[in-house]
Image 1 (cartoon, helix red, strand yellow):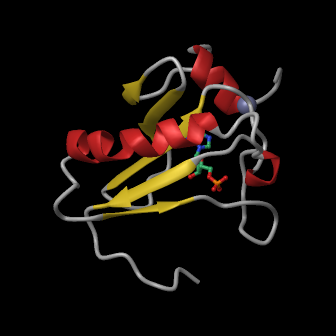
Image 2: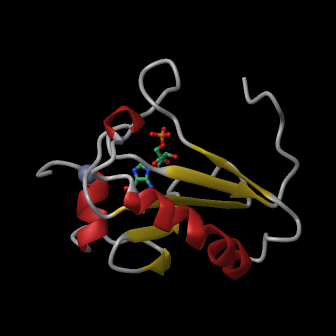
Length: 114
Ligand code: 5GP
Ligand code: ZN
């Protein structure tokens, strides 16, 4: 997707502070962290929102969730805990149209988020 900022980050055209990368997913620090640990987990392929997930592209998400324990361990938050959040669409305030999961940790996180 030509003008997608996360596609550009996935391709290395825009720099990012990477935590983990393989052929399918990229994990990098959020530019405006909302917690002491705040990373974004993205599929390298462009999928705009969770509404676009289907049988043909969902494999990347099972891969992603298989990797989350390792990512949490690398970040040193597996024991203390963390929250995974994905905002979909207008009411959830999704601001980047490339599916991403926020991993937030290292502070007490309110619930419900509001
Ligand atoms: P959303 O609001 O769509 O759920 O989350 C988008 C996230 O992407 C925000 O937390 C925002 O700070 C982050 N973000 C937007 N542009 C960039 C960027 O160029 N680099 C990085 N590392 N994070 C970004
Ligand atoms: Zn994209």
